[in-house]
Length: 235
Image (tube, rainbow, N blue to C red; front, side, top):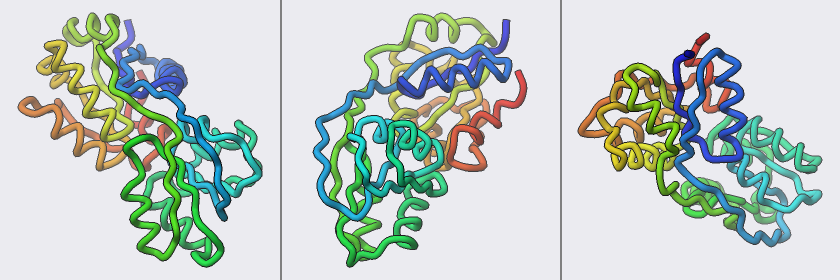
């Protein structure tokens, strides 16, 4: 039986990540920490639409807007949805702010920032500090999952069956670890490697697992899924 890898990413992205994990020779074990639901989104006139995630790209109605995406995966999602003018930043909120500041003019009109509920405040503040007017709008809501899937619980109860857990955001890391502790699996989870997409995510995972500690915490070289999965190596 291949070594198991816990995938905490929410659907629909979790299924795609699971396929990638399986292709590397591991057994993906789905344990989405969040449940996403689109919100009604009414576009407003703006010089550019800023997308902070693939979930935002899926939730926003397609238009002829110029799109600045946080990273290439979000840009690909926007193009697949039908947006024609799409640019990709280097993968995180700071890079998106830098990208916007380098290519857009604060005097040319507001920026429409599409985010998940509870997200994007720091990015909006950063852009406003650079002179932009920012219209922050909620494109989807993300609520914590109620329980861990039975498959994940069973796998974590088997000594050595799961070797690593993938974390994609600070919030999902915190919610996933809360679910693990609520299921009495905090100590079992501490025997895993925590693989984080960014330093902020790694910090959140390290804080949330306390009073336990991960066997190891490793951070992707870039804030994208390719770099995160590269930490797994071959199964």
